[in-house]
Amino acid sequence: MASAPIFSQEKATSPAQKGSALKPRRKGRDEGVSSSVKTLHQNEEASQSETSSAFLGTSESLPPLLTASEDLEKAKKARNARYSLLRELSRNIWNTKLPLHSARHCSRRAIPSERRKADGSTLKTKMPGTIQIQHREKTHSHNYHGLSRCASALVCPVCSAIIQTRRAAEVMTAGQYLLAHGFQVAMVTQTASHSRATSLYDFIQRFQAAQHDMKKNRAYRTWQKKTGARFTIRAVETTDDNFDYNGKKTGWHFHSHTLVFFERDKAFTEQEAKHFTELFQRIWLKALEGVGLSGSLERAADVTLPRANDLLDTARESGSDESIMNLCAYVSKAFGWEVAGGRSKKGRGEKDRRISVWELQEAALTNRPDLLWRYAEYMRAVKGLNWLRWSQGLKDFCGIKEVSDAKLMEGEEGDQVVWEFTNASFKKIWAGGYQGKLIEVADAGGVNALEMAITAIYLDCDPDTGEEIKT
Ligand SMILES: [Zn+2]
Ligand SMILES: [Zn+2]
Image 1 (cartoon, rainbow, N blue to C red):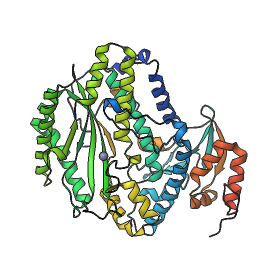
Image 2: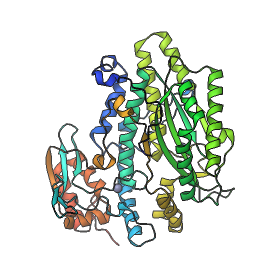
Image 3: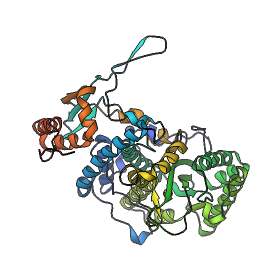
Image 4: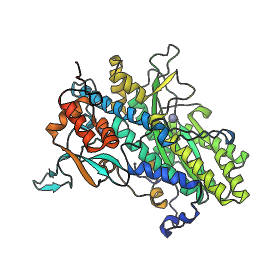
């Protein structure tokens, strides 16, 4: 099911394959977007921005997109916090308060340089077998090489941040590419009714089945044909009741956000938008009923068909190349964060009532251990679930290279090894949750500062102040 084609399979030549079809048009302000996307690719470690979340407002209220430098301090702090959370997550898996998960080994040991296969032969992993901190000339930054990661986008606080940042950049690239090539875009949010008694595991199983069934539905296929829907990118998200909220609780809220890209000449008219939205909602409701879930027409499926596209058509009619590109960049960037940036998004507007699973995780692993059982339910429910799914052929169409989460988490090779740990010598780093700190120190003060920090850690001192840590 994971790779099932979602939309029409008709063959079209991808402009991406013709080489530089898009490149000559990228001028002026668009450059800014491309280069920020590039930065995200280059350094998996330092580029995670916790607060760069934007959503698509109306044309009058384009929210400013935060620059990377504004966020750098916050990002560093957040990165350190994520490693501490990961250590707590791991501890709670070992003490069986949380279910078994590969995050218990994450960012803790070296990837072995060879693995033994079932037939007894060995397989070289092309990894050093140690944990290295490497320096990259081009970005003047440091990153880990050979450090074993769990690559879990839904559970691991460290991997999810890296994966989601990278995937958000890809979503932006794809959105930009498709919009520049005449596609229309819409965001569809799907959910179903739920209550405090809802089992998240059961809900997700049924929800997935409903989306699967829907694709085979004849009415849905007609909808696709009539609207020109061709590609999709789907992300799933879970929120929970805020534990501090005293009002009525409604339980787990699992939902999906899907970007649908339409191949059509014009944006939807208001009438068309209304018509196709209602059709979609009815088809979704029917699919929900088929799996024993329910929902109200407007609430179970929220479709934002025309807004962004109206802007785009206006820009296109104005004929200015630059304004189209700016708009494309903006729309795709905004959608990119909406879909792929779920991690850093606080339930806007209903902040007091609901929390994200990352907030639940943080609370459970820090000052609210009474919530561990609740987080455990989430961990069990999302096992094997794909956080982000692209329809078949989309990445290829946009010229985006397919890189698995696991491959991505291996990190790119740097130019120079500045430090090397064995599993044994890395133990203290892991125990203190200092993995992010070391990168920060190396980035700021080079190898000398790194050595001082490591020495401090081995002496049970604070790597920042050099003072002894009292336990
Ligand atoms: Zn991980
Ligand atoms: Zn959402």
